[in-house]
Image 1 (tube, rainbow over the protein chains, first blue to last red):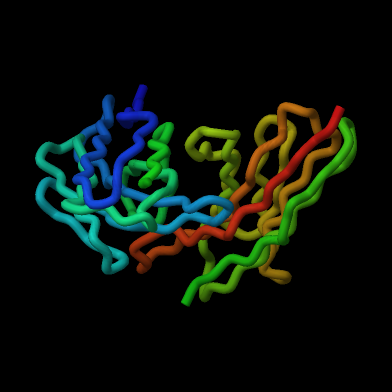
Image 2 (cartoon, each protein chain N blue to C red):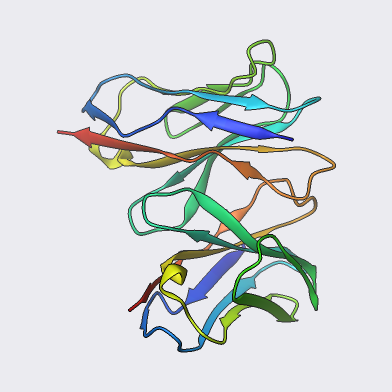
Length: 113
Length: 112
């Protein structure tokens, strides 16, 4: 069966510091991968998605970036965090069409102080 | 473009009460419709889905019927439990689109 991992689970970072969040998927090949953000009390915001190694699509302009160095690994990064980057970051994967069922990881709670 | 509108929360119910969370959508053609649930501090889990008109998705006592005529996919449960307390998201997906479209979420609290 497929599983999805995210780490770290919780992170507290000062403003201006770098960020690296990692997501890995097991039990599937060539998945579509996604990064979402949930700000406190708000809905889901799609940040990036990827259909293959090295292929990244960005949904919103911001100081975040994403990379996919391996088939089942998806990394979210920032060079300098802002207060507004605080939130709950969710990684997800799917097979086949981008608009079909997505499966979510446990999330990373990021607090920028 | 495609969009999903779900009822504003929060919703507070007593245990064993009947639950309805409304969801309506805007789309051309026949999208697939989903309900996801997010328990406190966790990621989203697929609760149920329906891929064509009049389909009923069901799971864990929850049901939702794809109504093309009213463009709706309301979530129902006959008797809620404290453990159902969570945020529920309605979502839509359609061929030709590059992503799932999520509603804003409805927070449900069930009191004993």
